[in-house]
Image 1 (cartoon, rainbow, N blue to C red):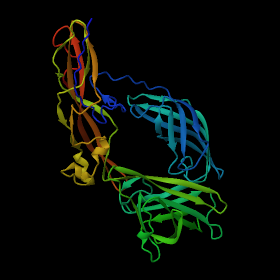
Image 2: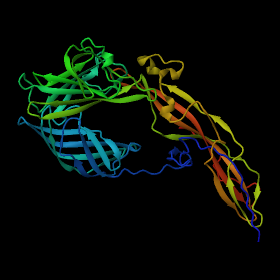
Image 3: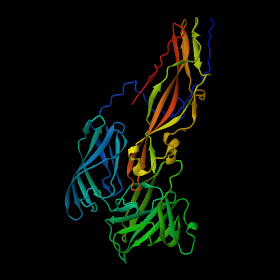
Image 4: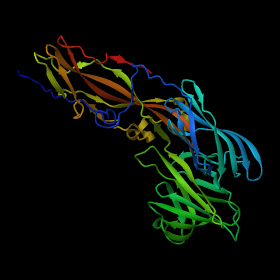
Length: 478
């Protein structure tokens, strides 16, 4: 008996970052409106552990359990209820809610900031005694509550940021978002350590990363640029001989002890302290100011003041891809008979088609004037769209560029086979957000990247040509 087989070479595109599963990478989730959405059920959350049992301002509490709703389906809130017994003998009722970071469906993390939130005044040490509850709020309107978990939290000596803001802009005392190149002011106050005196000073250590901050200082007759670090960190040491607070500020006249790396350079005064410039490859930049303090007895506290530096406009893209249009399947091979013994086929495409990626914008023009006039060219905003979407937005995509996407199949004896290709238009939607100097976020509109994917199919049947199982042509609206 003789057997025969035929190998047809066809090339179909594996879009970088889009068909990663076909290319051996991580699969991207694509929303198909023609298919019923999987049913999500908001389950009762369960708490097993909340730790640690003692924290300072800036420290995280981790909650472990089950069924915590993830951001795609809703939000999570944690609620502390009980009594705070402060170190001055007072007792205050506590009913405090906070939004934690959802690390996964079994792990939450919440950071106590910017002060001791269980204290009525925000600056007393003591102990919280009560319980913690996790609340699941589903996007479908459902609400589920865990059983309360008994909790005891001891407050350790802490640094409280009293001022963390741009000098100019009329901002509130502390902000956590601002813009590039902003002159900044910081004031940190410690609770739980002895106040500084001439005989027993408090020593504050302010550490800045050279890659995140633009710092200038007066250092005797030496050119400041010759000693300022280009990489790594530098530290300002402040001896506080009265009180419990230390401050650093752009244009300040106070003297500090300056240390760069392992080199102690001596006394200096700040003349410039500004937020740095965001690298060209990004749209924002998280930065920190690390503060530590030690009293004369050796007791200490520390805090990382966290800021996010923005351009005037950011693009936020959560990775969601949705189908906008399916085009009619196209037969890209001749009709192939299975003959008497059948045939095995490996399919790589020889014909091709090209499509262009494109961007479109939907501006919220009603608020544009509150920030700045909207430029006629959206790229003037300085947003790095390629980084935001994870793909080059100006290139063409073509179905003959892939070497890894293929399809194999078998034609039964007496039947026919034919290969089809379907072109699908997809949309990736990002949000354009404008930021003020004080960190206020304002929705400016949407940016849509049009992209393409190509799907092959081997159709078999008793007639020639056999019908494909690919979806019919369809447009979708959202």
